[in-house]
Amino acid sequence: FSATTPYTPLPPVLLVGPPGAGKTALLTLFERGPLYNPDQSPSASEKPSVPTPVAKTHTSQLPSTVELAVSDGPTPSSYRTDLDAAGATAKKFLLIDTPGHPKLRAHALAHLSPSSQKPITTTTSSSSSSADGTKTKLKAIIFLVDAAALADTDSPALAATAEYLYDVLITLQKRFHKRSGSRAPASVPVLVAANKLDLFTALPAALVRSNLEAELTRIRKTRSKGLLDSGVGVDDVAGAREEEEEGEGWLGGYGEGRFSFKEMMEFDVEVEVIGGNVVGEGPGAEKWWKWIGERV
Ligand code: GTP
Ligand code: MG
Image (cartoon, rainbow, N blue to C red; front, side, top):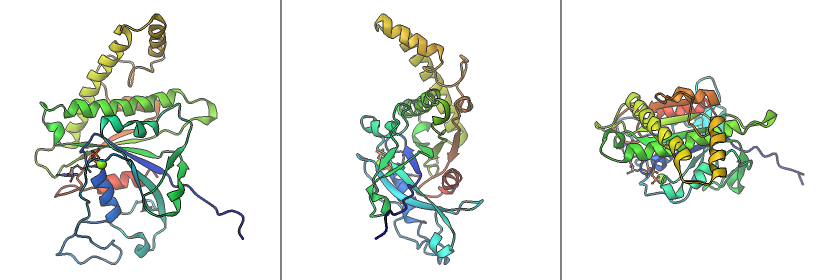
């Protein structure tokens, strides 16, 4: 018998964002392949077209994971490409879908926590070799937002979306501060994916970016005030001040001005905003796929 089977854990990519943003829909699109187009005969290297590339989704209550592959070259392959048929060497990774509901976010944020030295353990829904759990470092985060919901300034969607994004970014920032010596956790890039650009009411990526930055400016002001003003004990206030002095309680750079995603570079966190859509006519999901391919 063979002594041990060599086992390489797959790099995980985390899919987060508010409820209804389209996380589960995106996962099913990447998993199933291209949109069905009756006028087009599929080329040999494409995954067979399926009539329903995007699964009917419902509110997710549990995280789920699929195993995906992107070609291992200078230019990542399309998610439409069937890598076996194309004869390409593939980089495999895990895409982890998480529930967006505020009460179910703990799992997603636990992946990012600075105190959690525990590597990610996931089980795949497919009966793959990694179904027994995978332990490896997080490669990237996709924060999916509904660009149409953000267009309506009267809806609470912008505030709710930015609150979640704030939690993600401040957690990554704390992770950066906690790193000591050579055991530093690797930095994790964040893609803010502005989804549903097929809808004419959707905001373009540049506006999604500036609206989120404006809302994050407001939130960090409120949160830092809350740290000092709340009626907590003297010790707690001292603790908060100390944290404040280290700049840990304040998202981004020290300036009082407008928050910009660029400030996160100070903590080795790259944030990029790219628009797209999972269903309907529009720029599609190819740019997001490419972004992932360059980081796994
Ligand atoms: P939770 O599981 O509750 O966190 O939500 P989710 O982010 O997984 O959302 P889900 O994938 O269930 O999608 C919510 C709804 O948005 C579904 O009805 C999708 O069909 C729809 N949707 C997803 N992507 C798009 C898109 O690009 N355009 C449009 N028009 N609708 C989309
Ligand atoms: Mg879902």
